[in-house]
Amino acid sequence: MLQDENISDPNYITSRAILSTRNEYIDKINMRMIERFPGEEMVYHSFDRAEDDPHNYYPAKFLNSLTPNGLPPHILKLKINCPIILLRNIDPANGLCNGTRLVVRGFMRNAIDAEIVLGQHAGKRVFLPRIPLCPSDDEMFPFRFKRKQFPVRLSFAMTINKAQGQTIPNVGVYLPEPVFSHGQLYVALSRAMSRSNLKILTIPGKEEEGRSNSIAKFTKNIVYKEVLNV
Image (cartoon, rainbow, N blue to C red):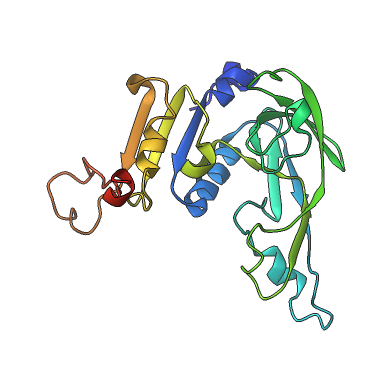
């Protein structure tokens, strides 16, 4: 439970995160957390379009429903002091790189006032603009999808892949299903600074259902021996 005295402390907010395997789990956790986070909510809507669609085959309502990997959602809900993560390299020389973690400090119509909280630029106040964004996988759709939105996501929770390379003092790992790629479980567990600051929640699969304990005590790890033998 978030305590009022911790909300304004960027070190507290960004020293913990929940990691999971898929964006669908991350989005649900982030939505639940921002609902419980105190303060007035600010909502930003994206402007979406299919660039090579002269006959308007893809209406705005359909485009708004899409959230490709690496893009912010159509509806971005934020509150003062909530944690966010940058999704693009905007100004690397000043600390604004893909994966930079920040907290929101203020809102404007066309900019977000934020504070960098980790790394050599920690404490620096920055203004994040709306920018046009395209999925990294151009073959994901039969059209070129473009979204104009602030290049951030909430970061109460993040995917294991997004957390790679980061050190997070307090880590929760949420595994409603086992990991699905080589080394993924190792990456998740090694983000924490110590075992005492690591919590893991696994959900029992069909093979565990019906046992006396409803909470699974184990999860599968994926290791490709071929990789280790190279």
